[in-house]
Image (cartoon, rainbow over all chains, first blue to last red; front, side, top):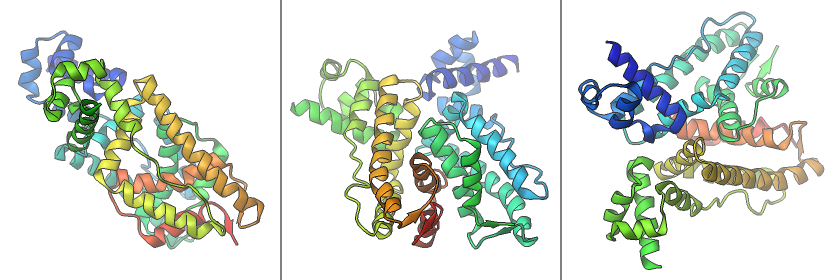
Length: 178
Length: 178
């Protein structure tokens, strides 16, 4: 059990420092201070080790929505934008997206993460529409892309911080708030 | 010269089929039908080979804006969304973003690509604001994230096609169109 945890820590650290290409049996064994055979015994393939590293990443966003929704949404988006600005989070997200193109287990994991976000935001946005706080005819999955797309593009791609006024502009794109 | 082109073709094909991890001297040499020494002679590092493959990817978007702007913008965004829906384009973009986290040459290439897009969209949007077609107080780099973020998120991450009505909703988020 201890070597398992040490191997996962070593793989996580190599991913963040050098990218997914560094997560090989040899490098992970060296970094964890265990034999290569031990790494092979737990994870016969390096891809499955990478997958388990990413499964350990929690998504602590958009839980327990509050009424009114807007101040809560603004706080959650602020926390998400700050988290994505950290190189480790960008490394995790982009590795998940890229590896999913060729590995169906990782694609399933990506779909599950994205579905979790859509379902949490649905549980937040739909009641706000019902009680008249937000007026919009845009379906929820597209509302999610309108909210998260600009934040992901601005931070993970353009490497620019998301300002508070810009965050308000993004929230305004969802529809009419009362 | 011929072996150089064959090596670049082989590297491009491996990247699209199996991901950046497959772009090694050994695999590229085998795929191109040349000796490993030939690959090493042209590109001492596999990262630099990957970089040159990505430099060959053209960005044929947002050139030559028209008046009125909106129909032109809609056509350009349609073409971009369709292109990003192809697995090869998603592979190129995500590899560029991910490798940029650890390789400063690739980061410079990413910054150059993104700056090209911002400058082309600036040349399109600013005149539309001046002549009163688009009213907005949002700075151009944030307008670019509002336009491209949802399309990238919806296609490359959620793997969902961008519908025409959704494209119009995205354009509407920029400001007031007259």
